[in-house]
Length: 212
Image (cartoon, rainbow, N blue to C red; front, side, top):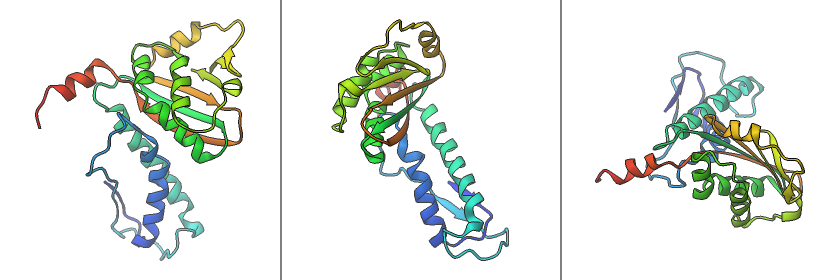
C-alpha cells in the first residue's frame, strides 16, 4: 500500500503506478511463484491542495513520478530481501540483447533459475549455470558473443574464460550480501535488469514445515 497527500485523480495515478510497477515489482522474483492476492495499491488523499493535474504527461508530475519510481523499487527490493530463507540480494543486468523485451526475459530466466540461486547461496561463482539459464530463456543468444561478469569482474568474454582470470575478487564478492551479475549477449542494444535472492535450506524449512 502506497499513499500520497497529492491531489491526483485515478486517471493520472494509474499509468504512473503501472509504469513504476513494471520497472520494480515486475522485475523481481523470490521463487518465480505469484499469488492471486499479489498487488500494489496507490492512494491519493488530496490533502496537499496542489493545482489540478489532468494528465500523467504534465511536467509538474516529473518529480512526483521519479519519487514514486524510487519508492516502488525500494519496496520491491525489501520483498526480495525478505524472501523465505534469503541471505543475499542478486541483481542481474543484461545488455547486448536484440531488444529490451528480450533482455528482460533473459534477466528473469537467470533470476528464476534454481541452479543459479543455489550457487549464489553456496557462494560459488558458477558462471556455467548463468550460461545455462541464458540458453533456457528461449531468447536469441550466441555462445561466441556471450560475456559474463560477477562483482564487476569479467569472467568470460565471447564465450571463453578471460585469460589470466583471477577469481580472488569474485570469491570475496560472493561472500557479500549483494551479488551483481552482468550478462552481455553481444547481439544488439537491448537492456534489462532483474532482482532475485539466493535459494537456501531455509527456504525448504519454512515452506515444508507448515500446513495451510
